[in-house]
Length: 239
Image (cartoon, rainbow, N blue to C red; front, side):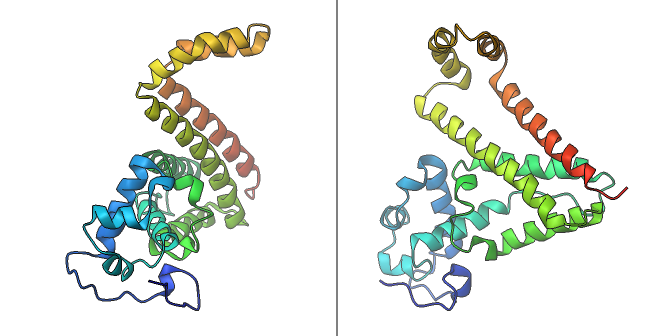
């Protein structure tokens, strides 16, 4: 069934239709799609597979979601709802920004597909949850006194999305191995050490990694980089 023509090619510009299966709702479709994305990634998601899991025919499914692109817009917006942003009147803008960035990262790691598709999911930014999230961030950075709050936000989000995408890809590889993160690293270490044996600084770094908790390492790397970004932004605040 072809998607109907919209003045704006987005699920948010299309009116929802009545379903011939009352139990089948857009919310139920999105929940199941997110479960599939979390478990198997973007490539494994298809409208056919989703319909089979929902025990719904194609006609019923397409009444709510016309294409996979629309489905991704909806999934992105639903996942974004999990990200918290402290109120604009928080006494310490930097602590609030750190909390917001940490919440984004935690959400992106729960949904490993999220960070990598934010810029690809059609007009996902038109979704109510994403607009609410953007508005709360704008209020926070405006109250902090940034003369160009949108640019400050873009800087923080570019860092957080980049780090979260890399981290999610790593954790996906670990999950596919069937091992714990510690065991996965331990298996890779002998070959890694041999490869960098003639490079003193790299060898020292690998030795340090082998001795630490991997979760602690990832948390520390994220916090360090975020501090550097916020240090730079703090310079832009009017004295």
